[in-house]
Length: 133
Image (cartoon, rainbow, N blue to C red; front, top):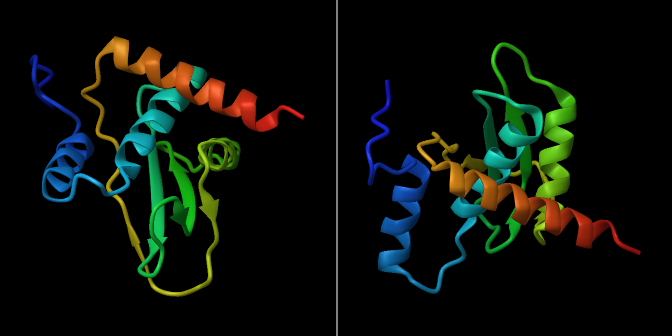
């Protein structure tokens, strides 16, 4: 069982911090993956959900190849559609060219309740602005 002691972070957040310490001007997709994961968990009252983001080796910044949501024991298409929309609302361009891809790690949790509420509000606001005429 993961250690939820104070100071323990999601593995994706630890990777983000390490990567940004080397290249502070780099785009931080890890926070968006965590926020979309926390948003889905809050919205659908899910105890475990993984948002899987693929990227082509030639893509950078807010370009990704695809988003898939994995929720044990099945792969619900509507959650994947919602996550896809959330990434679009955050400004991502999603384009799968069929070229080789690599996957980002998924959010392992270990977020505070406060972080979950912030993530939910951030994604809901982005979706509201994106859908506005």
